[in-house]
Length: 207
Image (cartoon, rainbow, N blue to C red; front, side, top):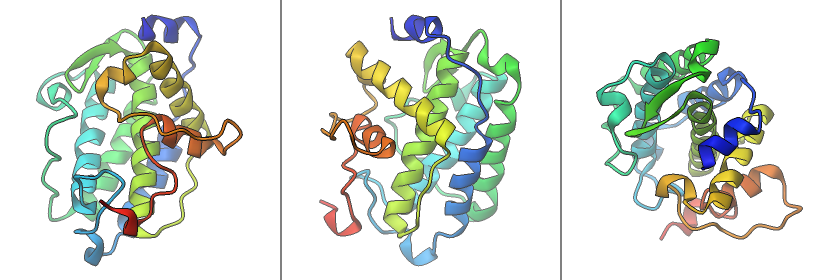
């Protein structure tokens, strides 16, 4: 139901490049000393989060290309991939590849797969935006960096998360319980709440 409604709503193609660039800049600024620090994802360190970002970037790149296989079949609940030693070069590279793959209009059509789930291309693109926006905030908050997400990707993430919440399946069960956020809160905070994040999280707040 969620996916059909999404298509009926006339969701448009947009460029994931600006948000991928935001995340890439955060990545290269992460100090080695923070790799073991906590993140808003309770069971993940910064290093784990970087590994997850690398894995999802490859997965959504391949989803855009309709290159289905191991990378697109891995369920999101599995352990974060190991962080490669040259992550400061590898991760910005695959983020760039992800953005370029989604610049092909064919990526947004038909059906593809991500996280082991078959879904319309237009939904997969929105999920990719949501992943980059939310995990970009995770990384920035955990490493003490400023964070200004791309407004287009932010709006796409909010629209997707609202639809997922209204559908009642929480986007396939990959998000935590919604954190209440005031209706007049900034859009980023509303996105974070819908994703199961507490916008007030700080490193010292790690459980």
